[in-house]
Length: 198
Image (cartoon, rainbow, N blue to C red; front, side, top):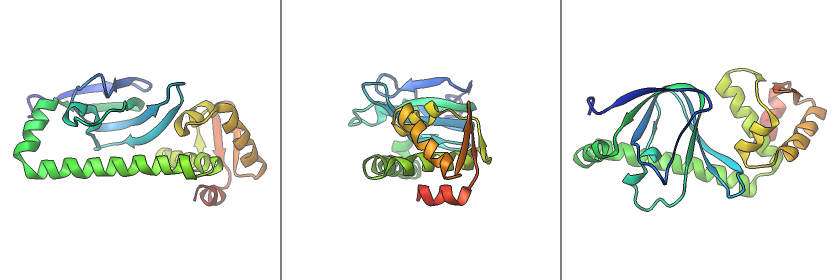
């Protein structure tokens, strides 16, 4: 297994692959951050989950799952180092080792749960809740109240239009929750942001 693993460096902004067209193998993040998302026909994106240090993604080994008929895209959000395990090798390992199989099933359940939560937010959650939730998540990921982020990036992550997000951020500015300038967002009231997100 170790002989078949390949380590590679991925730069911020790089796309890893499309799930339906490729089966490059299992991806394990050594360090960095990778975003998994789906895309509508008109190019609108919705983030499903993120992979951080030490996390594993089974969806990059899509040929292991015969009934998955949707595409998941992967984008590198921070410079990352990842290990790739070829799908045939992982399939042999999971077939012969019950603990690996159990881990795989737990990981799939976790990712499915995350994706269902995202869908629930889109269907039942208001836009203000989704915008606030995304900003709150970013403050945790970056460990900072000052975020280098654009309205377009927020819209892309929550599956909305930039103009709609800009209007919502204007309301949040009026309520003294955030302050925005070109390419930067500052969280002024974290408690209010939490209330809005939850």
